[in-house]
Image 1 (cartoon, rainbow, N blue to C red):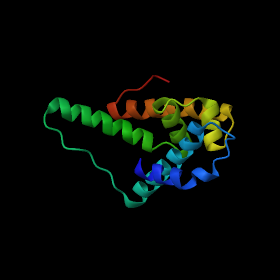
Image 2 (cartoon, rainbow, N blue to C red; image 1 turned 45 degrees about the horizontal axis):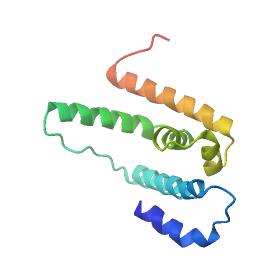
Image 3 (cartoon, one colour; image 1 turned 90 degrees about the horizontal axis):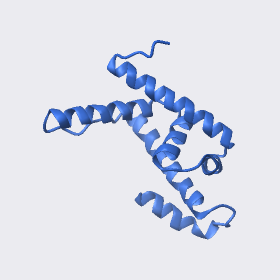
Image 4 (spheres, one colour; image 1 turned 30 degrees about the vertical axis):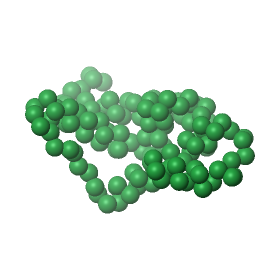
Length: 130
């Protein structure tokens, strides 16, 4: 968040008001997160916090499974999923942030959700019968 804030403050003078301030700031969030994902992939860093008991271990395992499923998505689908389902952006806002049309955002979200469901099902050894 610190990096996002510094980038936004540095470029605030360039804000032209052609979009909502939220959308403009969201671009910094998206780009900073993308940069972090790329750095993580390049360095091969992946780890889970230690769990104190069985319940915590199961919660951590589920979180790691979800994190892996999301990380395995193509970059565009991952960005749309996070922006829509986690951050609460509309497809129109996502389109403005990522330079895509809202229909592309909708289709990427549907594919991303399906891929995450499929990945989590495979992790648990469950199939959907199709």
